Image (cartoon, rainbow, N blue to C red; front, top):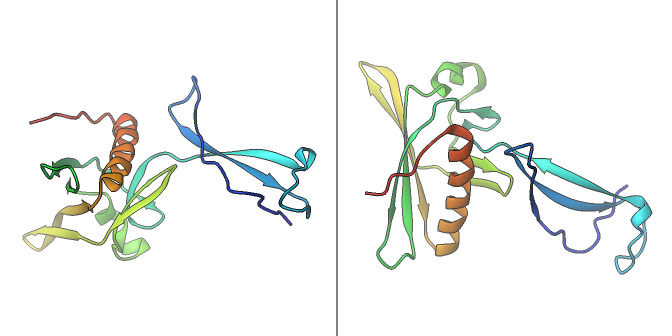
Length: 161
């Protein structure tokens, strides 16, 4: 049995040999009081998560989207619109289930939205548009950290208009 002691510190680590980031956690395997720490029974765990987008949880979207950002003049809120032409989820949705939302996953966690619309041409699925709304500067900053990781992983460029 493991006992989590104290508040875990989420520290991002970057290796010179890898583009992935990780988080370190201290995990204790003893039943000691939370005020004491036994370093002989603790180990460091580094979690690495490649930034990804999913429409069905557990199924990564392979198509790279066109992303448009808007931000209010006072900087308190904003919106990101993702457009996917011929997304790979259409290929696998009959095998793994229905689209349940829009999930952006990285080492900090999951950003999600249910504002997802499919585009059909001649009765066949042709694209997906997903919107993610940021209501605070903190949500904006968190989204931008995800986009920086996702862009680096997938070769996207930011063009300011």
